[in-house]
Image 1 (spheres, helix red, strand yellow):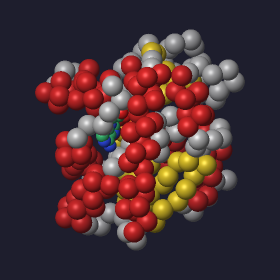
Image 2: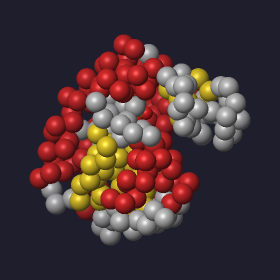
Image 3: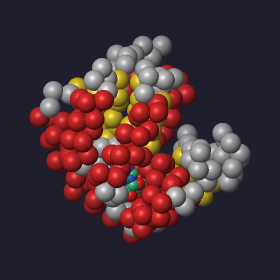
Image 4: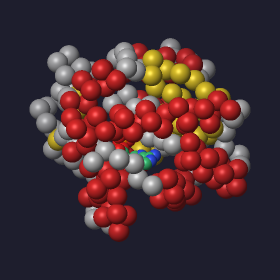
Length: 227
Ligand code: AMP
């Protein structure tokens, strides 16, 4: 398999966790636009200062700015690994159009596979209220404090991968979560309509199940052997 895989789904659907499994087990490479934005904020770059308020309040960064960040990353990473996952991009029909133009002009040999992650909002609110992430800007691994979750850290509030402290995201507070879900659903229809109208390959994943099952189903759907 070769190309760009787009993970499209609401906040809390598990895009990052699924992408992480693809990176670890399939050797793919991942760009999370959310992680990239948070890294800019922590490093207090010019972009970070510009987007800080939008992120904390659960709103979107401008289409042009986020697409230019993706373009810059793709130009650096392009060709290093056969499959690139874009996790959390595109999020609007306008971003999808900009990405299309980018692929047609600069990454002509890359196919685009669209993967939508389906899950009801009630489950998302629960998931986000127990989500914690690694505070190391270069790690940002995702965990859950839910009883019995497969994503619980081995040691309380410590990252399994890099040993940094875990903490809550500001935009996982209830008010920001409500805003993020509203914003996501507002753009969802136009975004999916864009891909339906194009001839891109689209698959739908049920992500209201444990992450290991999601990963298994995903591999089957894209034709990878899961034995
Ligand atoms: P995430 O980690 O994917 O939930 O993203 C966190 C925040 O980063 C979002 O609420 C937006 O403010 C910003 N962000 C991430 N990806 C995008 C995108 N594709 N378009 C606009 N804003 C984005």
